[in-house]
Length: 289
Ligand SMILES: [Zn+2]
Image (cartoon, rainbow, N blue to C red; front, side):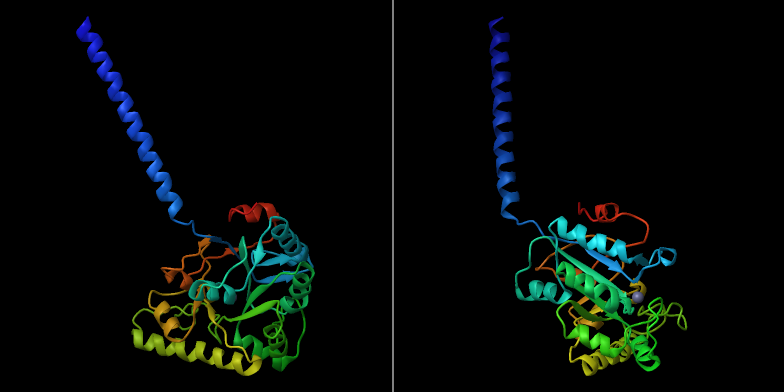
């Protein structure tokens, strides 16, 4: 009986010791976690076209009221719009960012960016990023056609934006906004093409767009937005060697700002905003709400 009690006591003492060790361990883990700062989430929205006619809206075209609701929603939830330039200055140059950063991007350079988006950004005191295709800008500068259901911005409008403080201009290629263009999708490498040939190809088209944008606006883009989000494993190093500091893709994920390992800056994820769902429903996908 005494022996039993003795062992019972020992058993209890052992349990107590294990529990104390467990708590001590938890304490160390908590301290360790606190020492590593959490990375800031950076959600990015991708839009293309804007329409006032909901019958024309679709996967890549939102209505003007959906867009306004989105901006009001972000504002209400305490989000602050930043440009890709601000992100670059933060990641490579330790410049501060506002709390709850978010980036609003518009691809292709539709004229509705100038006519519809710009006044809304003024109203809500926000900014956005427009990635333009040089060949479209050249064509619509020549045509002088301003039919908002399909027109693209001309160089005068792009220059006005580039020199204003609401919409930052980035490179969406000079003329690679095509799928199956002699076997090539956007700016992706073609199978069988050497890295040297691929590099020369990107340097020619993207370089042409860099020079043209600089000539027309006085501003040299810092980021490349892959047409259709198509890229290859060789793309990043070529973009880097050309002086690009960031690249945007179409993969739907929230980015986490890492200033140590900056590879993610050449594969920045974005969420396509389709027509037909509420702002709350859409932003829930990127944990905003
Ligand atoms: Zn595009």
